Image 1 (cartoon, protein in one colour):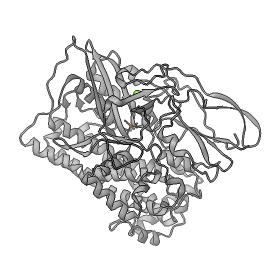
Image 2: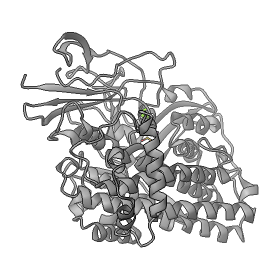
Image 3: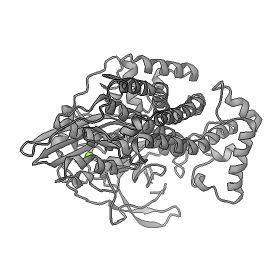
Image 4: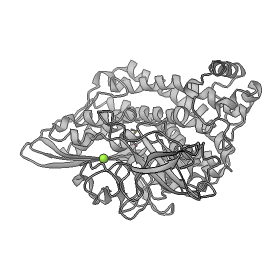
Length: 572
Ligand code: NFE
Ligand code: MG
């Protein structure tokens, strides 16, 4: 058989349910790819007819990961519609919560969700702990949790799992795969940080709860401002935030940063993670307000990877279409007029051979029809890549000094050329660089807030909703996975339409009417797979985007209906 199809469903260690199908030629090179979500919910429908002041609370239930992002977006879209400008204290408090979200999200992504695509746990068990401890000093002057005693303890902890014949959280992976490039000692360093990150997760979640009252779904934002007044005015609470911020920033600088320098050196010549930017149109918004009109990340658009020109973002140029997605109206619509009417057409029946050469009935994506619950967002009709790669590239191209400094240091430390950033390795590295940007500069917002509180203690703006008036408004900002926008219409005092255009929707987009691919699909084309029964290269690439499919379709089938099944069969 000259053409074969690989189905990976679900992709694990992500939020939600994602299915990737690829067609490979006789040389195991990917010729076509399909990225589809197989679950649907429809939060955008749920808020219709409801009080706009409640929208944020519904929106934050889109996801269990970037909960704050949708919460804030739900609140700010309504503020924008009603013409409300929240007081500076409220805006800066939101940034402090966003610091916590980003730091949490990015470290968890690298260590718990993606790190084991780069580090082989089983190989770590043959590491020499003294050599590993010395190795850590090559990437950091004060390495984190890599003393010989510490590494011995880590090794013994994981050995206990293995001896029981149970790898626990490390089960079901492709250990020993030929594209793993770390030495046993380097693997052990990452493994130690993996375990440390479990502890850091708790600290940074508490950081969110200081002003958010709880985590993962904080409760202190309200249309007009914030409600955590007592915490803002309490020096002890401010001090607590500072301590937890610094503990997390320390982990980012002494574990996450050096681990990515180490990865860049080890993987800098591994073809399956290089020269695979995916969609090279990049898109980000302004994010991280740290003072009046001052943002850590500035918005912009780069087309065809040409960093010599950065265009202004214009939200009027966004559309979502559904030619290949399971919705009724296929036409490209601006999100103010977007529609979310489901039209599930199912998967296609196929007779295939299983691993033993026996003919079986299988279901696969319909290559000519609809194959995803994820819509296809487009900017000026073009697919875009969003996320840290876009944010960092755009800000580097714009000469944002804070970003330029961090990127140049990383390129120098890792020996990578700038072009290498446009790749899977680059996506993973720029996510770390974005976390470092927050770790190094997120407290600028804290300092601005403390300064402002000395003379101004306003935390919420007054407003009225005129039931006789029609309103429309939006939120445009970034979430950890990239550019996020929410668009709403309000009439007779209730919501009449709501559309969320979400980072993972941009990146996981199916093809459009012109058959143009989204970024997950595009980055897989041309990939050579070493072993079709162990498609680690595909998983590593897709994980580098940090997929969140709950966000992308805002979804869960309430009846638990199975819409696809898990199968990896190289003989299809
Ligand atoms: Ni569910 Fe999200 C982020 C948003 S999705 S995690 O970040 O918005 O891409
Ligand atoms: Mg949507």
